[in-house]
Length: 64
Image 1: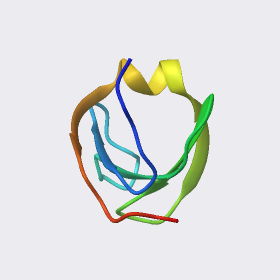
Image 2: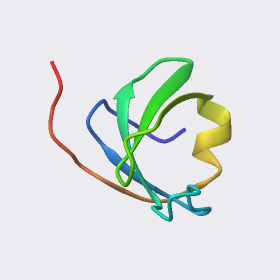
Image 3: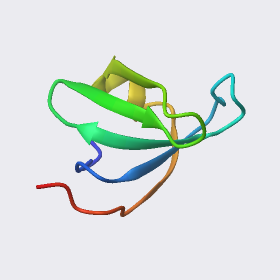
């Protein structure tokens, strides 16, 4: 299990239709709320689906 925190930037294997591979984590839990860094589109997705598609993770700003 990968430790993911709110504010982290995840680089995924497949790009979003806008062309961006980077997503910002807005909410954590069983499902994650992600926001596309390129266009701002938000989506909820199951943690297990995201963990197998992560290519890289970088520490982003802290959200409190």
